[in-house]
Image (cartoon, rainbow, N blue to C red; front, side, top):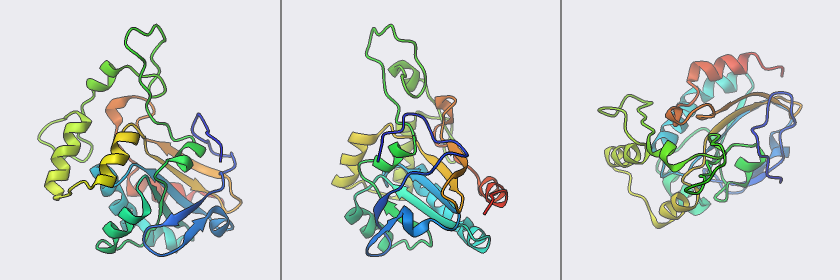
Length: 226
């Protein structure tokens, strides 16, 4: 599986994968899904409260997509043992896969923000060559749950406390290694090509954790050529 620098675009071939499932035993591969359209979302780990909320949103839209012949798949950046423990108590109709190394995220070109060293003369290009000052200035409140727009790390802390979500050692390790991973949603046609793509905050960092709405996903699925 190659490391795709830029996000895949409609018309391009979707890469293959085989990942362990979190909500049932076994693995799911691209070959298992090919032949009918599917929505696949690539997320940060369970440590991200915004990603957990988006997984719930996808679960709510899953029946509509299924009725339209579109399967719903999510790939989370969490070890499978940790994910299975979490989702044992929070069942979801989504096919939930685990990629703790973000290799599939990379194959689909979902960026992870990289920071320029202090004093670098390279021109910043979010998110591929960002400055730490650029990131420190970010303020978000995408779900309206915060009292005011806050820095993403502060927002995470507040929402995890609100959710009574306690990070495990596995969550802390994933956060340490992949804290700047972005999120991407792709609709894949029955023939295995990308039909629609949305990448989190690709334009600017203040759009971090702004994900497609249920209505956007349903509309995009309705326009797919099956």
